[in-house]
Structure formats: C-alpha cells, structure tokens
Length: 194
Picture: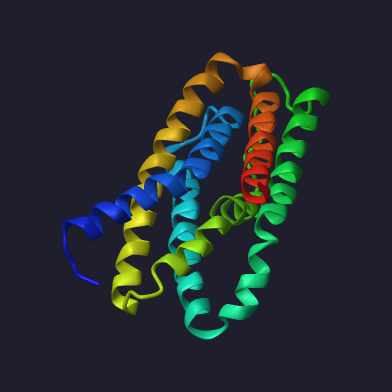
C-alpha cells in the first residue's frame, strides 16, 4: 500500500459512498427537529462520524483476528439495519400521525435513538475492513479518519437541508422523517439481500 493521491481519493470516495445513508437520516433528523441548535447538529453529525470511523476499523480487526466468524455475521447486516431503522422510523411516523407533538414543538431524537441510527447507517462499513485488509494499521486508521471527516461534512449538510424543509413542513415533519428512515432501512435490506 502506497501513500499517494489515489489512496486519499479512494478514501474520500469510500466516505461519500458510506455516508449516503447517514446523510438521509440526518435530513430526517433535521426535518424532525427544525429548531435544532448548532451544538446538537455537531453531536448528531459527530455520532455518525464516530461510527463511520469505528466500523471499518472493526472490520479490519476482524479480518486480522476472527475473519470466519465475521463472514457469517455479514449475512445479518441487512436485517439489523432494517430492524433498527424501521423501529426508529416507525416511532417517528406514529408520533407524527398521532399528533404527539404540540404545535410548533418538536422532540429531539433521544440519545438511544441516535446511537441506533449511528449503528444502523454504518454497519455496512464493517465490510470496508475486508477491502482494506492488506493495509497497515496506520493506513487503515487514516482511511477510517478520512471516511469519518467526509461523513461529518455530509451529515451537517443533511441536517441543514432537513432543518430548512422542517421549518416549511412543520406539522408533517415527523411523518416525512419516519417514512424516510423506513425507506432507508428497506433500501439497505434489499441491497444487502439482492
């Protein structure tokens, strides 16, 4: 493995590809919470960033330690993502349909919900550990950090877009956010299965 422009370009492209689910979920969070402050936005984007850094590194470690067990686990990835995102999206959807929020008042995604979103949107990044298996641990770390930085930027953009439309669609934001999360869960599932 050489440290060259191609390495960094590939790392950025990996980051963009892996961050698309987190981008969509960030938009849903922005829709759900249009009054979100900058610190909260950084927390959400930072959570997705953390998991996008962690998962490729875990995949790399698995390849170098327990590769056979990880290969069996890979078949469960689409199912796990589907269950987590349908659960979170379903809660948002039901809340919006029941009118669970007072007019003009939104409820922030809970810490547990944010954790589940982070896991669900980054679990496919475990597979990146296989593709970078020949890298040294330093190169795997750098690649993961680049993926995380790209994810953070993309998620901040998603949150801003979601907030913008959340202000415009205030009473329907939870419904739309829930539908988006369920759709992402189904997309991850169908892509993983087929």
